[in-house]
Image (cartoon, rainbow, N blue to C red):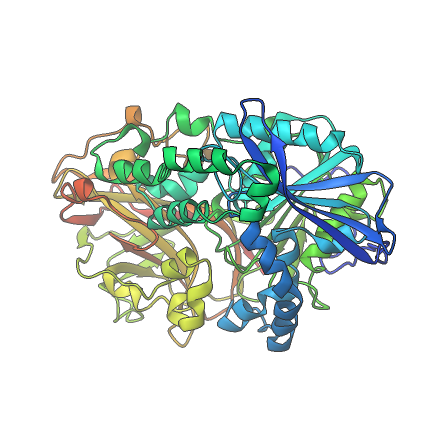
Length: 629
């Protein structure tokens, strides 16, 4: 995993970087500015420039560029609410952050995320020009939307070339964004455009299709909702912007020619048996960032419960920069709650200020020390402590196996089946069928797919999964004798059996409190027919598989023979969590996890009964790294 530092790093996570006072008291905006592409399509940009009573600053400045599909006109209006929402979040306050709660959802705006989500006015006041650009086929831009396709990537380069030619830009720029914008920023960095000085990617993914569109080999309902939202918002342009740019007819022609676009294609993927795009393929590969080609200093900002949690450290490892020039920062947060609690005395600086400090260091050459931060900064689950690491997983953590057994523990009477987890392999052969029944909406999976919003409805959506475990087989350990840290990715090796020609496995790893609450800390999933492992991309430690990378291609499909046992290895997303003495570790295995995963109708017909087969000669076990706290 991550390489150790070559020089000592001394700055603690709560260090404050000096971003100086605002240099310019006023901001001057221009909306829906047209940028023509080489094929005739027109992207439109909102531009925010600093200045004073005499107008915008006259000297050329570095630019902050954010590409978005989320209709910058809508985002622009959200800027008006920034101050009020930030004040409201501060008034609500955060929890002690041992667990992420509804209070922390409401506190999120106080952490500074609203600035970098649109245009970071904190940075613009200090001498940057901010741009938000609607990508092709979205917002007020013309053309047809096809996310991250090679033509869109070419648009990034052409738009950047336009920015660098403007008199208000000094030829240097940085790229940033949240979610889609963050992925666009990383793709841009891999293309190595001239003038790029830094990247600040918030809630990005290494491989969006693997992590969100085809998680564990099955579609995610949230992907369709996302496509519908982007498609709907592309019909809400800035009409004055269209008129000023002279592109009204072109806009209408393009929208009418492609009214739904990816909506139809997504439906086809979900309903068509073995659709080519329901597997990883060259088309999906063409949409990925080239991490090994990134040469600009890069900050990766993620969350343990983000939809892209799987790949924060993988992206960090793949970028060929020295520690300090690349940073990874992982909070205990969800996709829409990034930055909650930042700015508090015992926490890192507010997110808008951190971003400004990162850009100051690399775009302006200010030696503010941020390259001596981290390079790995995490908020540990379980106690909320901020930790700085030189490498991840924690090098003091040792590899361990915990074996599944059929012994009733008495700790999960609410579960479909209550079973055990121990350091020794079982000597008793048994077969544990996975329960069938209705879907359980009250679960942490709903919390994740609502991007944290569902936590407002109670603990069952974030910090107590017992309701969802009624549809699972749970394996629970004895109480821990000492505070124990889990660090890194895990692998759940199962010996299983299916009555049909396929089976789906959803896994949640939980911290069980003495009072019984089952707190999800990480998760994984896998469709049995896609269990083939890419050994070159997987992680092994002393020959032990600790993070299996599944091929997920049509060519890698393996048959499932009804009634014949087979083995699967399920990748469990990386985490850093402390389980206090007296707590227990639990693995919950179920055959569904809606709304995190959606098994298509044609695939549901192939899935009937499925069971975990506990065999002393072919044990099932969890491979993980643990250390004393």
